[in-house]
Length: 181
Image (tube, rainbow, N blue to C red):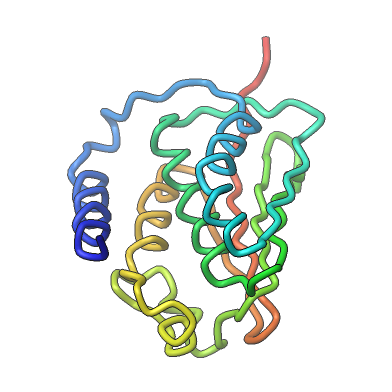
């Protein structure tokens, strides 16, 4: 199962890298729906560990232009990371804010093991895992955040991370809103 998961993630990453960026079929989608899909996908694994996923949908416009499957892949990678590195019985919070006009930021926050400051520059590198991450979850492939970075590399998407070892992490994906007619 571990090998199959690693192969699946390597294929996803290879596929993302082989796609011509100009040829990606973009659609206008509701970001709240994309997030709900990712939350539903991870609800079972979170529930087995007693982790609550809290999502407060955005009240205002949530229309973004993206490739829907890739956006769900990106959100799922970030959410899976948050669930895996949370403590049993913990909470993962997903919030949407408008940091500036015509932009929406999705913050996925966990209160888990966090990432040591010295590891933050490499956290999106392929197969890179901090020692504390390996100790907490030895079955990881180190590809989830590399996949997230690859999808977020679309023009104008930003994906910074903030973390404090022992206190958790927050990954914030910022995307431009699609003007409504």
